Every structure is written in structure tokens, then in C-alpha cells.
Length: 361
Image (cartoon, rainbow, N blue to C red; front, side, top):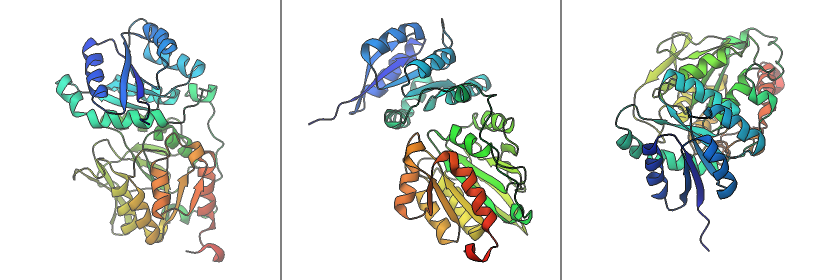
């Protein structure tokens, strides 16, 4: 018996984009466009009639703002949404807000050569739609719908300040990761060990992501800069389109950015960061892998474990997409599987045990 195709509804005010998305999606054997809409008001009626599995939604829309529509949709009829975003500063800020409101992921419209550019994205768009169709989508809550809402409870400061300079938290995520990373970082105390992060995200979006997190967290969150010293109380996010590696300069950890070829079809790649952490951090590393599609990070997490790191993976129940954690667990690189709401507390509790006889590794 042939599996049912993934039903997609495309919402965009551009007839060209609607046509291209239809061409791309219908070229896949396992999905089809069941309808298109030029604005959210038309989309609202089509959703009721066609019952799509996934919605692609333009960020900036006529008649009703895309974010207003998304907020209402996630509150009244939660469903997987893939945002189609412009590569502009405003577009990136709106996209970050859309992910907070419950969108599963996003793709970017090319600045030039829209037809050829989108066609080049065919595999990426198809992969993201497949992941979205399997995503665990939840109704929006007041906390997820308001960026100023009170976040997770902060965790206590470390008892030994030396731990902050000796230890590192190395984190990777993909689909659903922007909100998961926010939930992980917000409770961290100001004396937290440095955090190095790879989130699969294109150039132009990581700066807005870092700035948004910096305004919410007790630690400093920034885009990583090549050659800068890695300091406690800071989180460093790999810039879109650059690999982030941990390196050493004398006694100090430093951030290293690379334009080497994509790994697992990604740049930045989680495996690249994890491999460098295994090489230069070893037993000083706490590894964390969060929600995401694919297997990026599985091999690197195993290498970190073999080098003495202690690794945690987000559990299936709290993942938007249980792909990357599942692969890391299957590869044998994970010590503990932890629900996202407990992840920060568990990492800090593990850090607090370092130096005690029972927990030395």
C-alpha cells in the first residue's frame, strides 16, 4: 500500500513564489501542493477545506500580517508551519518571532535570481517539509507567544568559580532548536562555563538570533568572532555559513571560524564543532544535542565521549523533531537522555559534581 503524500498549502502574495513552490513540492514523490493562497484570509478558508499537513507561509503578507495569522493559527488550530522569509534584517527579526510563535522552521528567498535560487533549494525545502510534517506541534501558550514573558527558573551559581574557566558546554541543534536553545540558555547563571553553539541557520539570521537571546539571558550571547577568547558567562553562536570550532591559544580557549566545505550538507556543522571539542576540550566538555532533523552531531558526540566528555541528549517527548538526538543516542555517544525543561538543571548539577571523588571521569 502506497503511503499518503504530505499535503502542503502554500501561502504567499507573490504568484511567482507560489508557482515555484508548487513546482518544487510536486517534483517530490512523497508530497503535493493541495492549494495555494495569496494572503492569510484566503488561506484560512483553504485550511478548513483542504486540511493540509504542512503550511508554507510568507513572512510579510497583505491584508493580514503573517505573524498575526501565525499567532491565531497556533492558538486555534496548531499545525506545522514552514516560514518563507526574506534575507533582510527585518525579515530575520520577523522570522525569529515566527519561530517563537510556533513555526517549525524557515527557508529564505534568494535576493537575486529567485527562480534559479529557489530551484537550487529544492532538496532543502523538501527535507524541511518532511521534517515539519513529522514535527510535534503544540498550541501556543502565553509564555511562547510573548517574548517578554517570564522564562524558566534560573539555576544557582556554581559553588566553585574555577569550574567556569575549566569547563565548557558544547551544544548542537537544528529544527526547533532556536526555541530549545533559548529555553536552555535563559536559566544559566552569570558564572556559567562558556557555551559554544551550532544551530543550523543561514547567514543573516544568526545575528538577530544572538541579539534576541542576549536580551533574555543572564549570560552574554553573541555571534562568535574568529580568534576571540572563549570566556565564562558567554555563549557563542556560529555565524550562518561558517563552521565554528573550539581551538586553543596557549592556556586559553579561542573560537575558530572556518569556510571549509559543508559537512552533512551543513555549514555550520554540529559534527565539526563536536570534533574540535573532542580534540581540544576532552574531559572538560559537557556535550548537549537538542531537537533537529538528520544525523549531524552523532559522530562528533561519540568522539567527544571517547575523549572524556559527558554528553546529554534531549528526549523524544520534548523534541520538535527527534532526529539528531536519536542518531546520537544510537551511535553510542550519549550518557543521559533528558527532557528539555530539565536540561539546564541537569547540566549544572553535573558540573557541580566535578572534583568530587564519586564523579571523576
